[in-house]
Amino acid sequence: MEENNGMVAELISVGTEILLGNIVNTNAAYLSEQCARLGLSLYFQTVVGDNEERLTQALTQAISRSDIVILTGGLGPTKDDLTKEVTAKAAGRKLVEDPKARKVVADFFEARRIKQKDITENNWKQALVPEGATVLPNPNGTAPGLIVDCQGKQVILLPGPPGEMRPMFEKSVFPYLQKRSPGIIYSRMVKLCGIGESKAASMIGDLIEGQTNPTIATYARTGEVHLRVTAKAENEEQGKKLVKPMVRELKKRFGVHIFSTKEDGTLEEALVDILKERKYSLATAESCTGGLLTARLVNVSGVSEVLKQGYVTYSNKAKHRLLGIPKGLIKKYSPVSDRVAAEMAKGAAANAGADVAIAVTGIAGPHGGTEEKPVGTVFIACSVKGQVTVREYHFDGNREKIRESSVVCALTLLRECILPQIR
Figure 1 (cartoon, rainbow, N blue to C red):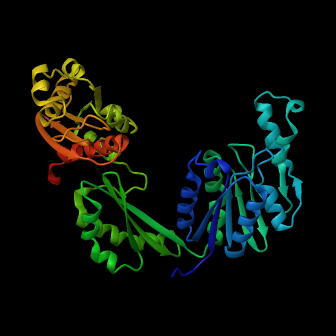
Figure 2 (tube, rainbow, N blue to C red):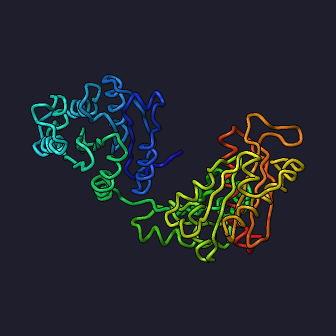
Figure 3 (cartoon, rainbow, N blue to C red):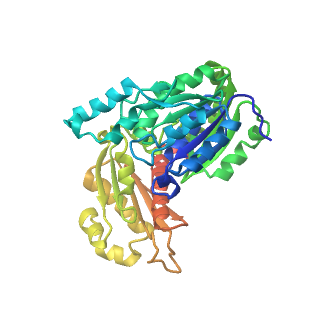
């Protein structure tokens, strides 16, 4: 049974487009993490369409059981934007025009050289706020955020677009809630590669079994395992002190399998850092992944210092023309083989003049598999200063999943080959 040791928060995401699956509800994921950081207990999340009756029902229920209710969406100028109106009714407040909010709307259209007489009346709806509400500025849009006292509970209204909601939350709402929260939840992420979730869990079984504060939770990602260490504390400094010994123990147990301890750290970022440290240049050669591997690497700022060339050699002709692989060798061993993968890596390194090269060839499906080489068979080769390592993999899932798994394993193998101590 969950214990409520602090303030209870609840999320309501407003928008028929979320219910229909037209957009992914990233706002709820973001706000859940922020509530955890603030030490708020979050027990319920609701998605409700643009319907006054159902939104009223959802808000009334949330107010009855939670201290803080955060709503996103439904603050725009159209008739189906009802969040503000429903909240005002629930709080027993009338809507009044806020001069600052009206000026924001006017300035928005003036900056776009739209005359005030040409602004449709519904746009001024965004300047209406429940009487007595705290108005939150929105430098990225026209709809302000609001904090409304409703039956002694705090109802926080935020715009739906993430580009407006997140900056508003970070600048205005987070500090407001931080002052009201009795404590915080502080966490650190430890990210692993080259090890499965079950093995990782078995290596920390004793820590999980005896955990109190902090706690450890494992999360499986494609080709990665993430461990989140979380502590309840009075403040961030105390949280850091509680978490630090556990993170130190995880580093001791997993060693070089840890590629990042940053919340937003990625495997490709870690790889680029290692390549820079060793002053290695890199080339890629891709068949079934069709450029996905190179795209992951190009996501990293500063990768131009190490990435010399990316080859997409989907056809046999391309493998021969761009990487110099003899036609007879491809015919003899087949394009999906350890031998061709090795030649792809060597050819990419030689043609690009790179110290390191990573190559991928496989059968992503749904067709093309055989009894000997079923769909999901992938060969990945890495060449480091002329020394070539080849691995055979068998992935499950659809075409997209197989290609994604291939990319992660290619990054992992590349890391393993340039960090020999992993072996």
